[in-house]
Image (cartoon, rainbow, N blue to C red; front, side):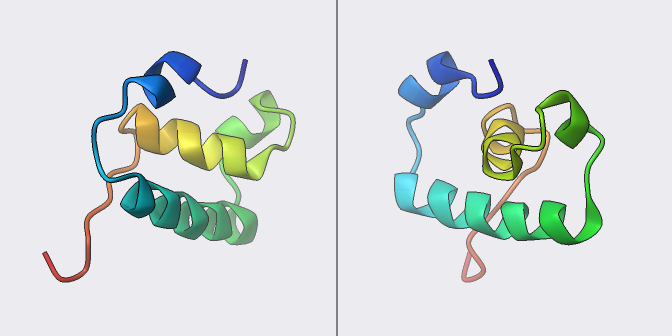
Length: 64
C-alpha cells in the first residue's frame, strides 16, 4: 500500500500543517518528479503524504 495508514492514524501533529505540506510537496513532485513515484504507480498525493509521514521530507511553518 502506498499510504502508511498506521502512521496517519498515529499522527499527533497539526493536521492542517501536514495537509498544506502535502499539497506543496505534491506540486514539487509534479514539477520535478521523484524516484518513488514509479513504485507508487504515479500517485502523486499519496507519495507526498508518505514522504511527510515517514519524515523523508521535513516541513515547517514559515513563521516558525
